Each structure stands twice: as structure tokens, then as C-alpha cells.
Image (cartoon, rainbow, N blue to C red; front, side, top):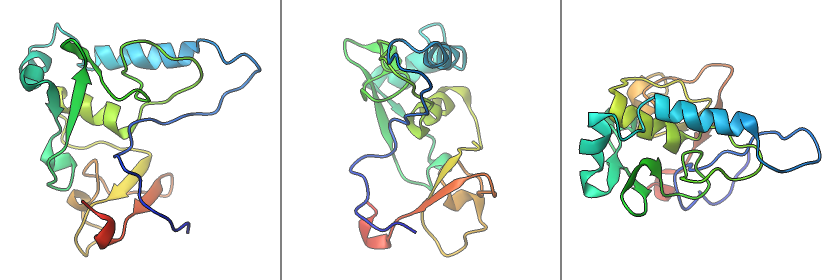
Length: 157
């Protein structure tokens, strides 16, 4: 168990393993970005248009332990992309390997009506029952394949 200060932000970027010496454009990253558009972050999706009328994606509280969290969409009302620069759904494709973060996936959930997400990196929200799905970000109890993060109650915002 590693102890330390919690991150200032919710997980907005996830850097995956890179194989090779060239840190240029990664086609896997590009594919994941385009799949994000296919999963709902697109101007053709009426839910995206209505979700971002206030310049952000309001994440479903059923997936965030009842906590209200919003993700700002990209500047200039670029509603099909997210503002946080490390996110996979940032407007321009960055170099190097990146995988979908919790922020990317939860923004897609906001416009797709998902009720449960199997995030590989699970964050415990609150409560006393670790076996209760609603206590975990993504509304799913972790299994043996997941990384689990539990913050002290005093560190939660």
C-alpha cells in the first residue's frame, strides 16, 4: 500500500506503456480517441449537445458515489472534446501512448446513459460497505483484475 497525498484532480489522464524509441503519433491512441467519438462524444449526438449547453459534461451521480462532478468541454464550445490536456479526448491528438481515463469514460457515460462501468482503476467513494457497487466510481465492485484506490475520509472533497 502506498500512502501519500491525493491527486488535486480526479483521474484525467492515463499513460500506457510505450514500446519503441519514437514518441511520435501513436495509432492506438488515435483509435481510442476516435472510438470515444463513436461512443457519444460527437456533435451528431443530441445528448452531447444538450449535456454541454452549460460548457461541461455533468457526470451521472449514480456512477460517482452521488458526488456531483462536471468535466469542462474543450474551449471555443468544442463539445465533442474535453478540456483537460492529459485526457484522451482532448481536441488535438498528443504524442505518445495514452489510454482512456476515468474522466474520458465517465464523460461518454454522461451522454450514453450507461448505468455501470468496469473501470480498471477503481476509486472508492464513501460508506462502510466495500461490497456495495454504488460506493465505487463506475458503480461496480472491483475484482481481482482491478487496481483499487481508497482515499482517507479527510482527503475527500
